[in-house]
Image (cartoon, rainbow, N blue to C red; front, side, top):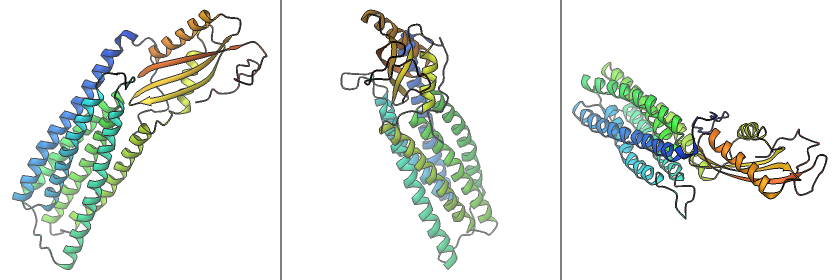
Length: 338
């Protein structure tokens, strides 16, 4: 659901020059932070509106949704802090930058989403029980509460579409997590809308029951957010399709006899690759280094979000085999490892 590294890596030969990388990173950070701030402002406004109308309009469903938006504001502030930290440039202690802060921010979002889901489910079950035993007497909310719930649905649909588009464009885990949380808020607002509508028609038990069902959907999303963000922090290696695409780029480069091994690691949305290639064993060191440099530059130019490439080369002669490596051109059927 939340994967930022689909099977097909975005390849666009010649789409950018290496000197443009700082500007690309700056634009990415600007879009990501803008998405966080827009969501924060929207949630603050909706939290105030729904909480106020929920109290004045005697709507427990809308009040609960307003409390949900208040929690969105709380973790939105935390995420904005982490996003600012993630945009800091590389330094001696963090040579690949601070992009992992985005994954930490996503963990924060996931934790808040799961906590909110559990709280909503527990409150919904209690409300259903109280209505069943007659401890609560709910006669229906004011019509303005229904309009506010519908307004929330409309706002959250727009925020979901826009935020997820930014998240997929920038491959930012935190922004994607916020986008899916906006989507959760659509379900919560719809549940409130259904609950208010049926409550006004004399069926108050539908309100908390809908809330319990929505909480399970929210819980599933929170677990997915945590799974994706923690895989980043655990340095999960990208899939085999990335190895194939790197091989397709490297093998046609002049001087490369074979791609022997590929190791790719993620740092936030960025990739750092360690590649071993096979070259003619009769070349001198300078010629081998020239080929390795061509490989590095080509990968940096053709693979989006590639931040660094380390190239190591082994000598090979037709039909030879060394126990230390697999640069034997007599067998080209083996896929490079990743």
